Amino acid sequence: MFKKKKALSIALAATLAVSLTACTSSNSTSSDSTAPATAAGGKIDTSEFQTISYVMLGDKPKNGQFEKVMEKLNAILKQKVNAKLEIKWVEWADWQTKYNLLLASGEPVDLITVATDWLDTWQNAQKGAFQPLDKLLPTYAPITWKEVPPENWAETKYKNQIMLIPEDHYTQWVNHGFQYRGDWAKEFGITSPITDWKTLEKYLQAVKDKKPGVIPWDTNGTSGGNIGGYINSYTDAIELPINTGLFALVYGKSFNDKYKAYSPFLDDTFMDFAKMMKEWGDKGFWREDVLNYKGDNRALLEAGKTSVDQHHTQTYLGERIKMDKLQPGSDLQFFPFSATKNNLVSMSITHGGTSIGAKSKHPERALMVYELIRQDPEIYRLMNYGLEGVQYVVKDGKRFRPDGYDVQRDDFYSNFWGGRIDKNEIPNGEDWAGKGALYASYDKIKKAYPYGRFVFDKASVTNELTAITQVVGSKGPAILYGKAGDPVKAVEDFRASLKAAGFDKVMTEVQKQLDEFKKMVESTK
Image (cartoon, rainbow, N blue to C red):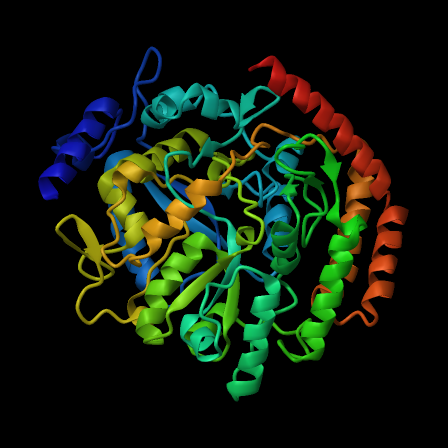
């Protein structure tokens, strides 16, 4: 392992090696120091120490481990590129609003986590939030530039300019679903995997009846994932990357009819969902004050105080390991929403990525720092795993928790979701044994994500989208959690409000642009 690590570091250094102008002695004397790339006609000057910001999504870690890791990581960055990395957290409470406001504010952020399917990358690109990277990448991130193939760079372009670096060399599944306690399900007589919402309802009702003190689904009103999951389960629709706030309203009809604009909120799908959620709310599957509640559903699952949590496959795989330790015998299981109708598309390569803010004062050094995080094995492992010996140990080429590891005291995360790469991963020796089979089950039914290059131009419907987003935010949560009174009346009122906000105009524009997108796709086949 150490010989391989050294070889990788030397190879990286050889690729990037060039003398620095007026750098510190540590840069010029380190035998395997990674130096920056050669600029055309000269050398990169890193004599000025620079602090590079990186915006991450998530709650700032509070146990002190993050600071310890960053101290070591920054010592290496100073040596290699005379820079310091500073993480700026966009915390989960009202994260979408905070994230977009940060970009709209004009604050000079350097690196920022982006995603075209959940972080409004194209909408923010249209507002001029990011710097084009075409001219910078070959010089300041040359390994990444060569590593990402042209067809993948094509999916990162807005107006034929690269807006982000895709996380395209990392294997993961981010299809959503419910994670639930397999031990309790078996106790309740549910012996087959849960693959539909009616069986999940049976499970939740049994928790309500037989587990005193446990709230079946201790969710909160800031989460909008249940409606997207229901649509995934009971239609063939594929969500389009068009932001409408708390949840998406606009879909493609199906994989076979992908260029047909469709909204399940205008047919029986949303009505049936609203009726079910009213029943679930009335049955007490969540708190009465769910719309005002801000608790941590996942932490409560880990504490044995709730029975389900909603998120994606990668989260489940991590939680499976945690729950085996925190709730021994819990046998955490996963109900992927796609299981009901086999409606599963592969993850977009721009589901995770990194951009540089339009107002960044240090775009060149920012890219050099990004290149090291992605390509340098030592920095990569610090960023993703923490300190060897504290957060992990390596045995036979796999990662394990050290003896005495305490998840609360020793846990570390940086939420670096914008450039992970398989070649620098150390396989997790504690991975759930069923991971391979789960991935294989997905591979059997997956379809290619069809909208990676679809960039919706909202210029002609900006006002309508703003009004629609306000309708979703004001009326959506109550329907999602059965707190809007008569569900039929609530859905009809929701639809009327959407219509008044200009939803028909938006759908017409989406269809027009899908027609144009179809022509573009077919012309490049």
